Length: 317
Image (tube, rainbow, N blue to C red; front, side, top):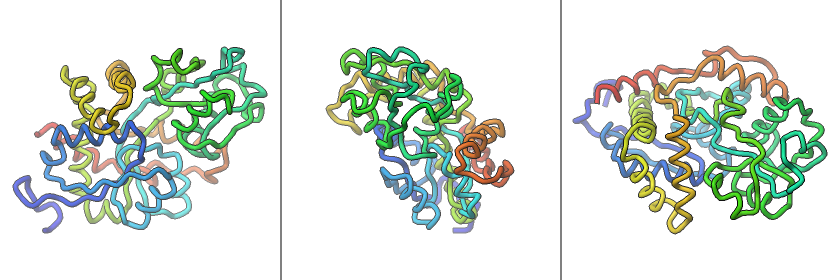
């Protein structure tokens, strides 16, 4: 089938997706399946979830997977600098859906973290970068805090609850259950770091060149889901059905908090765009942390042609 020759009546486009294994991502995948948007845009997607960012990047660079839809992308920039054939192709969740929690009653503000331990991921990873940016915003030199590499936000939250670290960032789904876990939030990232682009979509250059139409249709399916979550009156019920499918018997209040956050903050990029300002912000952080050696041009990092095609597909559907 020649590129660009297929219509919705033709055989489906085959696309291999790799995403993180977070609960939030699993719920969105279940919602996407429930809504039937991939089928609507004539895509047959094979989705694999991984818990390791290295595996995620490796699968795209090796062309085992074509695209990642929902992930922090700070690590993509230094990979491109080192020669990886990758491009950011769309915006996703614009706002950081996390808060900074502590179980230490003596810690009441971010400023109280001086001399304390903070759980994050590895240096340069999403959680670590978020904390660096937040500390800087509060006038705290990161060297005044002892970072502990715990891993994922879920693991960090467990460490905070257990008192293994003094504080750490974790997802918003537990935001209204702080008393139940014996923690309290001292900052929220979505308002304090609203300029920080939380998640994006990125793809291998080979997939962009050879499967561009299919990738655009995948982006259209996800983009239509973002709009549904933020705009449709039935979104909360649909989201909760997907939550039960993906998470099972987990606390439903966490799912309700997730969709409430999405609707209250309108957190997703309905237009699928990424701005130069967002890329400059991420590069500034990377350069400060020395995970990136030189500043790249916007066009070296981003290709929005597929996102523009996706928006056209959404609006024509």
